[in-house]
Amino acid sequence: MIGSTPAMAHENPASSRQALQAHSDEFAKKVVQVSERVYVAVGYSASNVALIQGKDGSIIIDTSANPNDARAILAAFGDKLVKPIRAIIYTHNHPDHSGGALVFAGNGKPEIIAHKTMLSAKPDVGRGRREGGDAFGVSLKADQFINAGTQLEYGRTTPHTREGFLPPTRTFDGDELDLTIAGVKLKLIHAPGEADETVAVWLADDKVLFSGDDLLKTFPNISPLRGLPTRPVEKWITSLEKMLALNPEYIVPGHMSPISGETAAKDALTAYRDGIKSIFDQTMDGIGKGKTPDELVQDVKLPPNLAKHPYLQEWYGGVAWTVRGIYAQQAGWFDGNATNIFPLTPAERAEKLLAMTGGKEGMLKSAARAITDKDFQWAAEQADYVLAVDAKNADARKIKAQAFTELGERQKNATARNYYLTTAQYLRSNP
Ligand SMILES: [Zn+2]
Image (tube, rainbow, N blue to C red; front, side, top):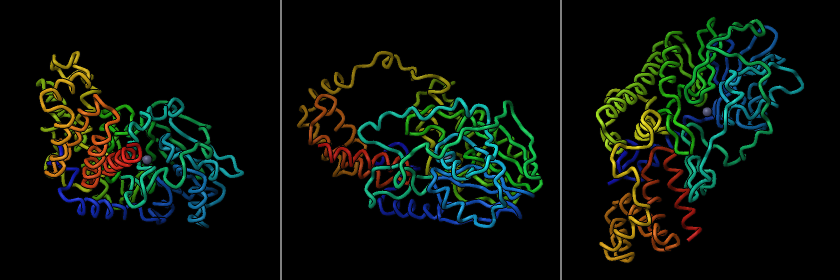
């Protein structure tokens, strides 16, 4: 038994570890030449930085996570960089894309271009790393950490700061902006998806599309664990439609390797659009039939051909979370079962259950048996009943930590793995 999301977990910890370790190859450090005048630095930072050579200067798309990474990328571009940098374009506000602008700007005065909605973009709400949980595994011990799903690591070696961020000097409202910079003709397209303010950049003469994080080689993080609203799913589908209509020959995503060839580009964009749309449509259909989120998580799956697609593997986002996120976004928090209008508090429920099952001792015995039976989710849930009435119960915390270690080690989803394992680490160091 491994819970309700088997697509993201293996029965065997070694095979999960191997799969996620192999996924780290996607973040290998390299500068890739995409077209005659386009290069992208992959794996030097948490996100990619792209370079477009112009007649009398260069354009930089995204700026990496921090000044250190930005300096390494500038060095890696070397004499490919046609000086000066005339413009920096942000695909979106996320700190891993916008944290190194200061270094690329140097002593020059490049225009810094973004969509107007970036000015009001908010950082993640977060939830104070409840019980130490963290999707990026920032504090996880090195032997437990593999990667962060769309990057080798984020925030482990360099803390998140905004010291290298520069605010946009030019923004556009509306859907599109045509620009010529250093003799290079570009179309900027507002493409809400992973972020509301996402800008896709279209270099029509080279047929190169810069997709930001709207297309990544993983199931999209539509409804992340880390504490922020569900992404605008319907707009994301529309953005992918717009990208498909361009018929790109190359795609440079915000993380991982570029895609080369019209067929491969179309295949990835189509799978992404169809995958998101299928989960959205199935969820909406189920809501219409009165199904609860718990029921929908059991029913809604990617169609078999898409479930196998390399761009829809659940390394970062997850289908089950997307279903729950869409439900909350479209139908609200209430699942339709009147029992849940004003449910018992966790402590009240636990007290009543414990009275039926031999008290804390009986529940803990049963939880320990669940660990032996490899029924780890049930072990964690039973530990929670004890913790609901006795938050500092050392045995319950120990069982919960054991359960999370086992569940985490079986995850191929990096964010779930990191969240389980950092919570387990926290419980062990705060017994
Ligand atoms: Zn990103």
